[in-house]
Image (cartoon, rainbow, N blue to C red; front, side, top):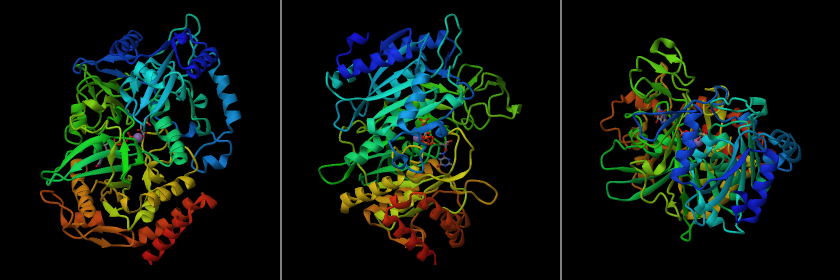
Length: 595
Ligand code: GTP
Ligand code: SPV
Ligand code: MN
């Protein structure tokens, strides 16, 4: 199989990895439906997959209860010096880390097949696209990569004999001794998990986990951590952003890119169905944007992925009907609950839970069970092309021109529904100081407030101080073609703990105001934190929201904002001399505006 590879570097690397990991056999993926079916058949016979009768070609997987989300504590940016990785990343010296991991990789694929997955992030052959090769011992990963990226022989053809690729080595870290029976979700214990990045070499080594961003290496590892470092070197941007097209009743298109932390609303906003008359929303991407300045000086974005790896809980016909329509066939569900009639269910899918389920751990469940039936980070893997509102231009190699950037997060208090930056530097300040309550997309405490600059804290492949500088420089290059920057919070709560804002499709009202700001058709209210909608400018027709509730949503409590200052100072202080002067200036101006 290896001898069939025509790219010398690839052939050599695959041989090296095979020698190290000692799999029983090696298989080079061709990306065909036949191959997918074959993998699924293997997973079915191993008991890892459950077919879903209600959804053609769809399967449920249950992970090991210890392997349910990304592991930020075990994720490393391994640059020659710790300073290059910066204060927001875990760091181990590359030599040391490679020694540790080479030890782990030695013989780690015994008893298993080693799959070689040629994949393209971005349309094959597009000048923006990058080719990766993932080596993995997980057929579940192969199936997911088929959906999430463009896999197969066409990629090898594009790579040709001398093309370059990003090597992504993955092992679940669970070799099988002769005669040893496999488990349904093999993985390694937490202390052996390593999700490692070597940005100087464009190299990814992942060990021990089979879940999501830990294992589908095209996504967070390549398209964000490695790509962000490449983007800085090459003068473009790799961001944790959804991309959507909004068309107003007059037919004018606005393209919006939004960065919210994990499980904070990107997928939902990307497929949102506007509740306001005659506005149309189309989805270009739900998680990652690669952006380059085009010949006209504007910023163009592509979605490097070809699927959605979306949060299942909370998804319903009410909250995200377009996602529900996408999920009808050809889907991989992971850690959802199983119904008695062979369908899936999760918290929030229906008002009333079914009377009986098999929960994500494989146990009987009833509404009296007092625990979640689906894991809070249960996910669906779905082909993007199946989304009824996928934008007709979603695979356009040159991308779509961005008019608006949105930052945001999950904040029960303090942060208003929407706020526009005074200018680019102020917008970068808003992104750099973004804070959000932690979610179950990472293994760790949920609900803790943390600074998550640009929603990139877990995904920036270099020093975050330099990343801020890169944003400022991109703004300088864009000049008058800069997108406008906004900050949103869909998650403000009333004193009795309820969300004040209805969210989901109603978020279109906020996007409409942004578009009107871009078009210059409405004024805005100057406040210490930024520009807010003037009374009556936010379209609330038909919304059951009382004037006091609306007031609370847009409320700016100056004292509460003053209380944020010490934390912002501390956050900035960790970057030392790498913190751009222009951001220090923004902080001082903010302090002055607060009085
Ligand atoms: P990742 O895939 O982890 O990057 O997450 P994401 O940013 O795409 O988040 P997603 O859209 O999947 O939303 C995560 C959770 O937030 C789901 O349970 C949603 O139902 C919920 N959510 C999304 N948008 C809104 C909103 O506007 N209001 C409220 N209250 N909840 C929302
Ligand atoms: C996220 O956590 O931001 C995700 C899910 O999009 S994962 O691919 O697991 O990182
Ligand atoms: Mn994400």
